[in-house]
Image 1 (cartoon, rainbow, N blue to C red):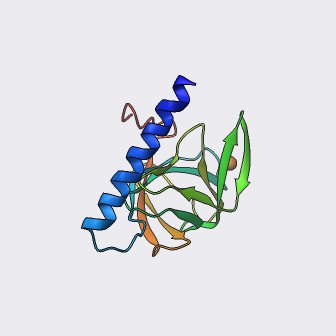
Image 2: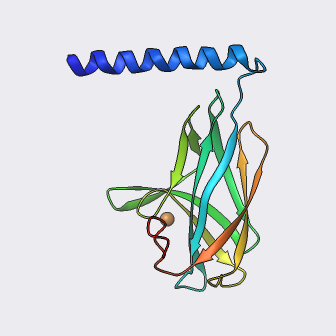
Length: 153
Ligand code: CU
């Protein structure tokens, strides 16, 4: 009961902040997307690689990541991980004033049908396509096979 009351208060504050935003801004509610911390661990296999990044939405509207392409892969698919099992997803939601996180052990991008094997020190070009916002092109650095973004090694 007590917990529910606290949650409601937080939701209300969020709604007020949102109203404040659109009042002082241009008036049009739209997603405002940027990409943070993209990387690809150097793949072990020659035909498949994983990729990780965070999409940050500072806008007042939600959006959706609908497809991913890359210059090194014939196909890039989006996967979620649930209880250790991964599943291909057709799209991922990006909440307003929120973020969509792809990280090791969780959601991830899967680069398939590799045209060349990405090596540490290189970058691969990744194009993200959204339901509403224009596409974003990201230069994704290839890190060591065991790279951990929290330690930087
Ligand atoms: Cu996967």
